[in-house]
Length: 475
Image (tube, rainbow, N blue to C red; front, top):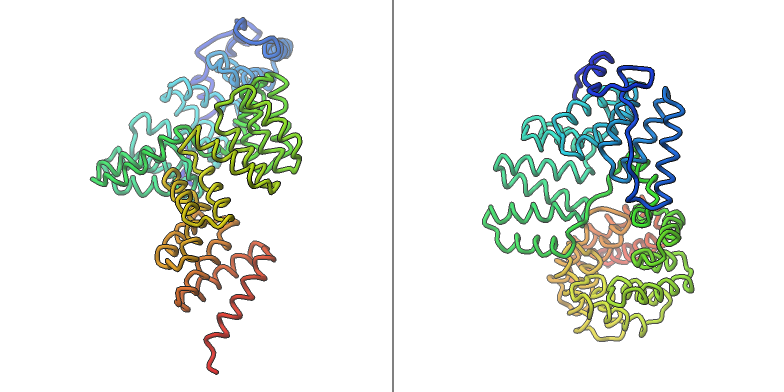
């Protein structure tokens, strides 16, 4: 990792002290004066409590910093800036307060100042990727292509699974008119996080500039269906700021992040807390249909479905989540009705098309199922399960080449499902009479399943592998 500029506490004080207070230390900014009329009573009480504590502990950096965190989480960025400056001057060697100060400076569009502050923070803690990424973003916004490109490349080298860094590297290359290189970086970002909306849009622009009109249109279609998808920040310090937000909307956002981390009980608690604050928040009910369903609590999930459609009968996601719940309970006819209702409201809902295809296939309606799988892929080209389902149904129809092409699209990114997909691809080659590729992929699937401890899958793979290996032995 690169070396950062060493700055003494004296230089830090000179940089960070444009405001002078009257609380016993002339170099420390005073606490902000706040007007909180636009906040709900509960949030006003939370801010008042933090402010009172900071005033009564005027020499405690943590008290000022904590107030800054509370103000930041509710968007009071100028006021938070004063608190973080104060905390950083009371505790000059603290990475936390310097980093938070840089973050609110950057969020206010003050990139020149944020760059200096981020470099100070990284001098204290050189290996905090979110701070490095913020610095690279600010350098890019300041049109410093060389410095930003170098930093993005360093982050990618140290953290190759960082989708944001690949995206940033693509933006630098695009600014330098290296369109092929930009497209490569954007594709890697999307591979790491398939719902990365900004990367899909940027890739579309790169393809358009490269004269690849059809590929550009495909990326734009993906972007239009989800304009807000972004990778998780992976920033524990900012997660602490967000966790202080007591608004209902934030609790839903926080709960969704917890669900992505597999923390279902904690996610459920956050969503229930959101409904305590605002019982009419339909998204909380929608998410709880899925959460309670995954935890096997059918009655509670159904209760939230009924609450969701009472509030908003036009929510496709309510019917979709309810369909998944019914599917898990093997109430197949009701599930099909729910997925058809989802598609009536939103014809582009890929998951509903895929699940409807499964139900149709289960009934033996293979042609209709194939149509639904193709619609799922058309609306979400990265849907691996839809590619898998379509590939499998094509192989069963002895359309081996087309089926294998679909199954090959399931192999990336690598995750716990990859051995199952590789196994299916190997089986498809076996049915097509290509024993060499069948052995290659089934052995690869065996190794992957063994590494992940997937014992049931491993048993099936080894059984088929023994049969395939035996078939090639001389009689």
